[in-house]
Amino acid sequence: MDRKLLLTYVIAAIAATGGLLFGFDTGVINVALPFIKQEWNLSETAEGWVVGAVLAGGMAGSLLSGRLADGLGRKRINILAAVIFVVGSAIAALATSPGMLIAGRLFLGLAIGIVSFSVPLYLAEIAPSNIRGRLVTFFQLAITLGILISYLCGYAFADYENSWRLMFWAGFIPAALLLAGMFFVPESPRWLLSKGRSAEARTVLARLHDADAVDQELNQIAQTVRDESNRKVDWRELFSARLRIPLLIGIGIFFIQQFSGINAVIYYSTRIFGMAGFGSSTTSIMATVGVGVVNTISTLIAVRFLDQWGRKPILYVGLTGTAISLATIAAAFYFRESISPDLLKLLSVGGVYVYIMFFAISLGPMGWLLIAEVYPLRIRGFATSLGSFYHWFFDFWVSFTFPIMAATSLGNNGGIFMIYTGVVLFGLLFTRFLVFETKGMTLEAIEKRWQ
Image (cartoon, rainbow, N blue to C red; front, side, top):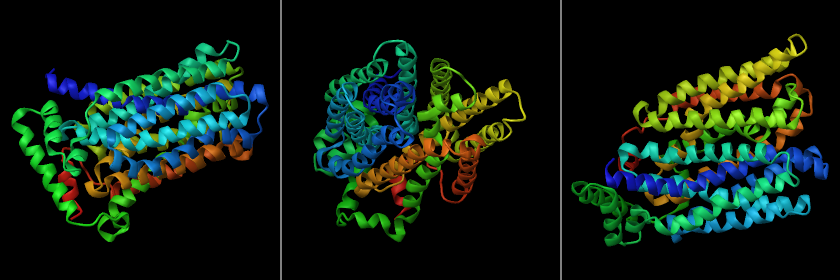
């Protein structure tokens, strides 16, 4: 492999550790929750808050991060997020009450909200256009790896005393690695040029691009920066008629992503498998580990082929597969009284696994990729953070309401999964009429589309 390309991948891997922490700290509650409920006898509402605290923190982090990243730079805001990850992991692991645990998870959510905006943005801005989709999808791959690692930690520590505390302590390690690693990666050349630091931007581009492409890339970015600087920066521009389509894409893709039920599965699959008849927590956790494995393998497929196949074809395939699998899960619960217990387990577990597979190759990476691509440079920081906010806003309501709905007839008869199926079918129309193909286009070429 070319040395510069290898360096680009190494930088992307370090930055994407933020995604691993995203996945770990959102996924670990799935396997820790049964033991937390056993220790503190949580109600459904308290359970929703313990899970949802990360998401509330994510909303705050995503809103704060836009202006901070534009002012401090993409690199330094990731360092700030790593510090918050370290602190939040310690508070959660040492919690002596549900309130303290919620506070620790709010801290973790704040850091997750920051990296969910800053890491895809950073990766998009350092990547050559021909591998931008692959590099930004590293973030989603890291999320799935983090989820898998959290599930494996849950299974490994399930029989230990204070097992859930050990699960939270495990998240301290990648937080420390992210903090150390971010000191060694370069700043985004696009951000450097936007601050008038062209010599530093050239140095970064020279490290990552072939020598004959550096001047062309630098000039192209500089021209975009000049065009943007001629107009006063105003966040209200995002809501103008010119940028209506990017705004709808940024909000709509996360609405469909979250209300397809992904985090009901990521956070509560242990409970879903319990509803399907799996007896012990350990057995349900083992089935949940399978969710993490399928998620990771499928995301690897997306990393490999996203730039080759294009955005829209992958969305069409993924949305169709998720709709069929969600309808299968809904039918299994609806007919649970008339089918055998073994068939119920097979359809529910199989349906969840197939759902995860199709989601991970499409909706999973596509949200972060599209919001990193479609906005103009001048307001990209604010616009991307707003898109990230909507991710957490929708995620919060799905995750908070799932245990409440699961305790009603909607949980027993599969009604929850029929709602998710309807959202996915809407996603097919959304893809057809709003999403446009960005495969192979530079960020500057995409921006000209809105001029």
